[in-house]
Image (tube, rainbow, N blue to C red; front, top):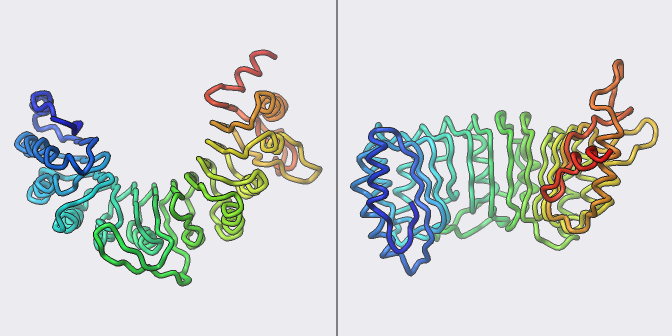
Length: 374
């Protein structure tokens, strides 16, 4: 359902009628600004008689929303816990005109133990951290490192964690005007048994101290994005990260998207990922032939190849790369090495890398292009 000047109620009604008692996944997409709040409220309220007749499993409010517009929907979920057993709740960016709305959302969360997929700002989450025993996927915004550690400690089945807009200061003012204090002192490692995927938007703050406090025995995928600081500041952070985050050695899939780091530091990152299988570099202004040569170059005797288990590399909008750079990588790591290690080799890293299966450059499959011409 798209919010705008008006909602096509007849269209919604037809779909709801067809759904009958089938559990619904409801997405309300907002394209409004605060000046349209009153018309938005009228449009959404016109839907309530249709929506409350149905069972829900997922509710997503996408875009910028006047959150108090949806108070009747939240109350319906609270008042009908058997009919509305939510497994997924996503609350987009919002502003709220009612001080009661955050309390209502917290009340909703406090009684919704069936949620496995949750995306909310941290200020709406407190103090309900430990009430999601089935939570598998969590997306949190506008929180402190202490708040992140708390939810990690209290959600033992969490597998996927996405964090954005974390606050670097100890005392911050949250979106509801409530001061929240976060500790910056040393803490014991927080062991999170189930987390496999970690995605961090670094636009406000790169939580290096947070990452070094985590013990993630099952982690295999890491994505870092939006680190737009100057190169020197970014490089300093990467330097500190490499020495303190022990679980980096477990990463098999790594993505850097719009992260300003020098090629020298990028190579150091790759050196710290010995079992890496998939690498994605997106919008990397500094990436040039130096990276492809580092991945292609046979090391001196008794030394490792760079990322010896690498199977797939994707370069997108890396403007300094040239076609010949990618062809050289394909020749060295696809055509030039076997796909399977020789029998009897005890440490294949010291002999030859596993053959790359795919090299993609701006949606061009360079592997196919090079091998098809050979």
